[in-house]
Length: 506
Image 1 (cartoon, rainbow, N blue to C red):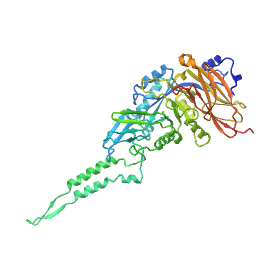
Image 2: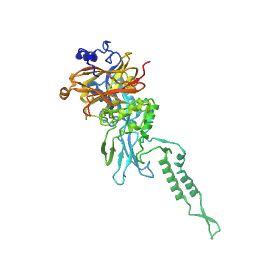
Image 3: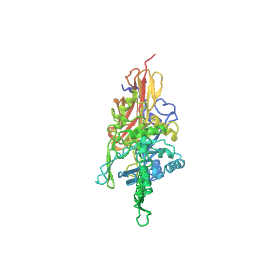
Image 4: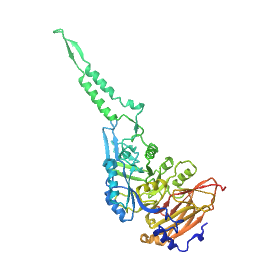
């Protein structure tokens, strides 16, 4: 039940204290004060090193003016799409090659962001990428109905360290993946044309002459031999480097395999992976080539060991709402069908002037203000996503408390308790960012347990509540999360979960 007796006497006072007196220990049990600092950040930023409009330093200045403290840059790893004409697919090609990290140079990309880190020490700037692991072609170039499918199906990767980490990202556009196996031997078949050419040139027909009794050569095979050499050379170049493709862009949909391969590669390199805009549906054209992308939220259920999902803005129809795909995934983790939990972030997908850079934010809970802590927060779920007018709200506390022991669990944590959990929430309001619509309607806080809304708190200003849940089931793992002001798709706050493991009392 909603316990009003846990309301503190002055909501305004606690809001002011939580916002501005983070060094105070007075309210350490209900605020992040003394343990975490809230750092507003933006993720999924495109620069002119990729297909964005603005140089990275200009973006840093714009974000800084908006009060943003952290930026994760995510230019595309590669935007090279190739359509080859059989049988010489690698030689006779239609190529679309736009700006990207690999075209700009991975070392240059990393150095540019690191130099900006030195120049703006009050900002946290990280380099990452929005990878395009796979695409495939439909239709025919000759019939003028060629379509590029899944070019907008992306996974963001954070935490790659070296240029080679970027260069070796497995993707069709980057010429990957392939492997040497028994079939690779057959890719050397053009060598047989060299042997045939040599035999043709070496072979001479001889006929006798009746005039002087001698022999003379007639009809040598030099020209056919040279043709064989040429054909062998062309196909040898076409087949290089003789690897057998695991998948390519010419054989249709390949399921989640290419995406799982990229996730596995990132995990091997201690990097993080977040599915980008999983509900996007987009159709556009580059020249005469159509680019088609359909929603791919079901792939979230069929891939494993990725770090998280972007829920704002293309993720709140079927992925992020209570009982949606994300909750199904979290329940799989609680039932041990998954080894790792899956977190959510907000992605702004900023590439220029089409919308404000701070429209979608990811607010980090950091113990120290540095890039390592940003990556740690992303890895451990210490962040929440905010979009639209919800940026006027600040979630100053969301904790689960073990009433008996006094232990606290924050977003991303797991807590073991032997009784009923107490959930404590503090939300404050920044009046300078409130819209007239927001002023009139206030906001709701939905408390979600295992995908179901168990309590809704209504507020028209700062709110500080404690709620004792009467749910208790020994030996079960559950989770709580919050959805704040999400009555519209493109606004609100979504928190990461807190997991609770119930144990029987001894």
